[in-house]
Length: 438
Image (cartoon, rainbow, N blue to C red):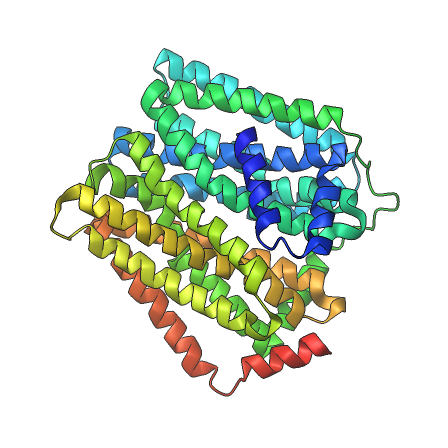
């Protein structure tokens, strides 16, 4: 994993070797021991997240045979983000963030020990897996308000570079995680998955303890979450540009991203792949996302932000439909496996275009005094994901995985078409240009 991250950083620096002035902040950040420790925590825990999601999906399908129950696993990972995320942010202003981060990592490490014992004894049921998913989701709800906040505090004047580096790292872990998860699941089973997770989490705990980190906020503001959040929603509902941007986010999270929960089922049931090759298949979406992130870093310009955002969403949904068609193509599972890896890579590139522009456009389109609240509304829109996971799981249970994917593809594209018809009177490019320049 450390070798992978070293190669990954080399790739980032090599994206545009002639722009030395822009490369230097990344080297400066990584030369800071404290920043390096917290960044590595994000990278390592990201790998754990994605290889566990892959392993949980494969194992859930093997013991239940139910696509709906498989889709419930990522739902349980995401629910705590909506239920607890904003409150954790308020709480983090009052308590030492080093204490909170190290405490949360210690608890999630203890969970891995308990789950590995259950797997070793043969008592690993779907209920225990679901419970572990929800608790893991609580840990992930701390990432944005605690770890990423610490990254920003440690970065000083290089905040944008720090966040860009962390986002690109997240895309890279989506490739490495499934590869590692598929191999571990095939070789040592679920016991090995939890054992390796425990070891890696313990390494993260050591990294946090070694780092010198800022404490709690010096003057924490009085919590006003509900009032500010309500005013943010009201502002978005009155703003046609922001409303259109956020509706696209909702469309993507209901009819786009949830398809990823079906990849393990496609690999195992439709293509008859081993867990290792299911891991390879799943990693292709992350591989494409990494390529897309590097591409955007090099070529994205404020004049084409919305085109990248909307185009990425359209290609992503279309790719999901094409992936479903591949399961019906004659030529055997090997042919479909190679074709599926290409399709998932393209889907990943499109997903990176969407993800990079989602926060950027929301930030730029909102006036400075409303940005924090509008970004809070963005979090709520992203939180519609569990609806999509349930939708695709229920349809896969009722009509089969391939049919479910083609249905959500057409539903998502139809929603975009209706949005386009509704927004014909809005010149998005001109509106965004005026707001960015203003």
